[in-house]
Length: 111
Image (cartoon, rainbow, N blue to C red; front, side, top):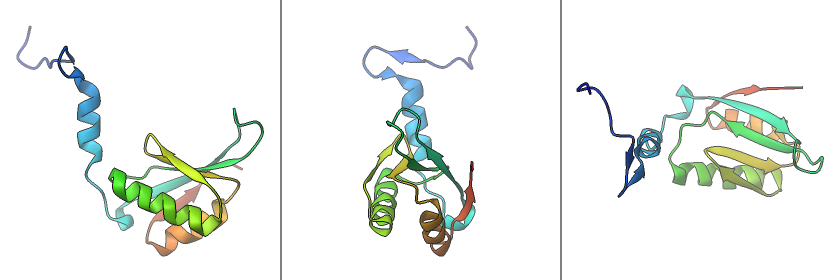
């Protein structure tokens, strides 16, 4: 084995690769340095549309605070899953306006 090999699995800690990913995400970037992508998805949701906000580099606390603000702005429910904010319904325009006012660069993806 070479000196550069890393331990990937430990019986005490589990999959160490996932811990490295979590540590990398803990550092947040200021809004001016981030480009956020807004997607619309309805696949696997019974035909109901969901707006996805992807590309955020925020800590978990900041991510849930932003999700709460966006849910209040849209007047609908939502959640945070795997670093992606999901807002129920088609709200890309409202979300884009809100995020731009907060200083983020926003790109609306899809039709």
